[in-house]
Each structure stands twice: as structure tokens, then as C-alpha cells.
Image 1 (cartoon, rainbow, N blue to C red):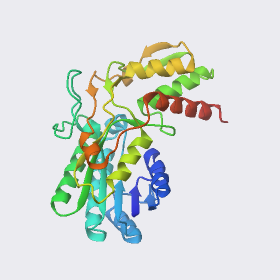
Image 2: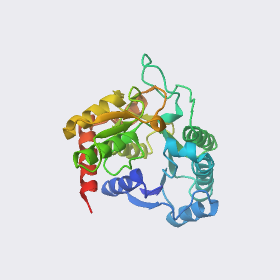
Image 3: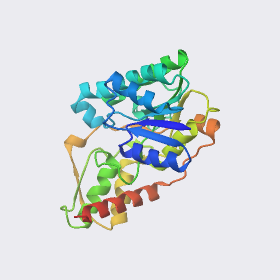
Image 4: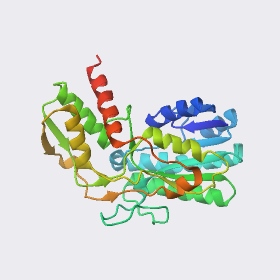
Amino acid sequence: MRVFITGAGGFVGRRLMRNLQDAGHDTHGADREVDVRQPTAIEAALARHAPDAVIHLAAMSSVAQSREHPELCYQLNFVGTRNLLRAVARRCPEARVLLIGSADQYAATSPAAEPIDESVPLRPRSPYARTKAAAEILGQQAAQNGLDVVRVRAFNHTGAGQTDVFVVSNFARQVARISLGLQEPVMRVGNLESVRDFLHVDDVLRAYRLLLEPTVPADTFNVASGRSSTIQEILDQLIALAGINPRIERDPERFRDTDWLIGDASRLRAATGWRNEIGLESILQELYADWLQKEQSP
């Protein structure tokens, strides 16, 4: 299959390029050299590569950054998706399109709730989540108009190479710096009571690869482990891994209300046989080792 990836230079995009190439796909990608905000740019890229499938990763992916730059978030996440879908309709209308959305599109729920499946209404709260939810509606409309569009709601995923804008990678970097003596023994944190569903990025990429198969219906799919972890548990495991005893300091800038966001991936399992394979301990060990190496590098 010839696959074209937008946002191919990002954390997920780089790994996805390698993952698909290793699986035998003819894979091409573009990052900032193809600005999805410019209709002619994305249309020219699709005309040049004539893909059988398109995976749309190009986006502003940080909730915090979306609050700082809501207009840019709208342009990248909503307008970019609209431009992409229009370009697909004109240049490669038979291609399968994976629109990569987020669990943040759901309303975070109470701890007593069941894991969230795809029937739960979307109630996005941040500019990031709202633009992703709106982009998914564009994808649903495109599917009703005849395009082969799969809508993906990926829960939290991480791994070596993720920036420290995201909570688990941020904690891993702080712990690595403290263990190397590069930072005072103080962990700066936000709300540690919230509960999340954390996956390894490679498990998520395997789900994306399986969703490219034409036998999989063009539907909406959660990618989730169904496994709950508090942010406190993540922090405690990383501290234990490093063998340090830092002071924990709450940072008001990082603080968000307590919530619970765990996913049900039954629909994905039924359609593809996918299950997550990499445990949380392995995820944290990989992140910690990665940041140790980076912080020791000149």
C-alpha cells in the first residue's frame, strides 16, 4: 500500500513512517514543508504521491499550547483537516483516510464510570479538544459523501522521543535530571489525582496500521488499554525507578481539575484483533532511560 502521512516529522509521525516501511508499505510523509493550512500545498502533495491511504497526524497536539494559541490551533486542527479532506476528494478519492483524534474529545468522567466507548457523547473542553472534535465531524460528513474515512480517538500514548510538554515525559525528564544532579531534588507537578489510560506509542501505531486494512469498516475507533493509572502512581513509579527522594511541589500553572479518562477499545479489538502489548512499567523504563541519555549528552 502507498501511504502518505501528514505531520510525519513529529514524535508519532517519525515512528509511524518507520513502522509502516518495516511492514512493507511504500510510505511517504510531509511535515512543515507541506502546510495543511494552505489548500494548494496539501493538494499538490497528494497529487505527487497518489496514495492508497492517508494518515492525518498534522496538528497542534498540546492542550496547554492550544490554550495559549487558540487561533493557530483552529487553523491547524480544523482548517487543516478540511483542506486535507477536500484534497483527498479531488486527488485520491479511493484512498482510505485515518483522521487521528483524541480521547480529550470526550468529557472526562467520574471514577465510578465505566470505560468510555465510542457511543459516549463528545464534550470537549479545551481548544485542542474542540478543534479535534470538529475535525472528526468533518470526517464523518466526508464519509457520508462517499470518502473512506476512519475516525480514531487515541488515548494517551508516550515513549522515547516524546517532548516534555506531556506529563509522563515531563516527569521522566525531571527525574532523570535530579538523578544526574542537574536539577534540585524538587519535582514540580500539577494535579496528581487525575486518572488516565496510558499506552506505548508502538501499540498505538500497530492499531493505525491495522486500521488501514480495507476489510476494516470506515467507522470510529478508540485506541485504549482500558487500564487506569493515577498521575500520582506514574510519579511514584518513576521516582522509585530512579532511586531518588525528591520534594513534591505543586505548580499552579500545571494544575487542572481532577478527572478520569479511561477507554474501551472493544470495537477496535473486534474489527482487527488488536490488543495493547507493552506494560506501563516498560513504558516508564524506556522514557527514563531516554531522558538519562539525552541529559548526559553534550
